[in-house]
Length: 478
Image (cartoon, rainbow, N blue to C red):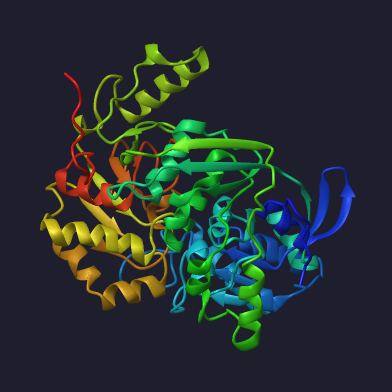
């Protein structure tokens, strides 16, 4: 078991555990415990490896899933609506078979979104390092793992050597003071953090999230929070593992058992920031009275309280911000001084690696159950579970019937409408409330106007027909 010196952060300890060699000032060779691929980028790395007559060094620690471009329509086959998408699927399937790695194919019962199935199967565990050619790999920091996104070339190097050359990032601690109100969620927490710190607020940093509000979060909520660390421009996001995490991991398909399990848990208990440790940057955010957040523009930092006012261009802090706000408002078809409830919705989407876990679906279904509301006329509503395991569990609880009865489509697992890759789209000019992580121009399709929010805000908006939160009204002074 590793020996840690006094005064280390969680990130310091994780880095130390995986540092094979210091190569140059600020740069290290890190050991990579797990590699996860998906069909949109995985075949590129695998086939390049094969063409170079190299093999996968640790096949038993390498995994791949079909998630980004698979169809999610009921009764789907192996095809996809993405132009040339079947080529990606066939190439990935062949490369996975040739290299002997574990593939969760389209019809595999454990298939799902890469960042959903890796924790639910116990592929990633606290203290591990994991890379994936996907920017939201930082999700797994919610378990206390060192996880970050890489390019296909870096993925190829990791496949061949189990190592990567990495520039050591600076460290930041974001401490939330106060308690998270009952009507707000982890999604609101991270949207608020991005709103306050900006989309560049954690540029290049390994961010540890702390505070009593964080320790109070469920494990799946921590995964949601860390998922959007990349929207702060961070290298990764981290939360120290605790007994909740150990309980979550126990019994997972790839988790250790017996004496190995006990040893693992003992190790995880040491993965926390020492009281005397220091960070390169400290940020404190008060969340007392935090309201549900909804984005109004084309960056996750373009967020306001659900009952707030879209900012006026004249109030921008500088010329660059004014220009960005103007472009965002033009694209989104909103005006400064208006409220988001002024704009009718055309569609809603519940899904993605941010908010497609069982707890997310329970939250949304609970709103429908206790209110008896149905999706408003003219609003298209989709619910896409994050994995086969999530889908089966939701159906066992009857959540699928609640969604269907309320007017939602109930889909097969996959990334679906989180991003547009040339396949299924909502359509130009369509206004969508979405549980996804990015609201960039064209993210969900050319001209689609995406408003980011939590599952419960999305489902309440679906029923209202406009953007609104399931939260108590806040009285304002006249």
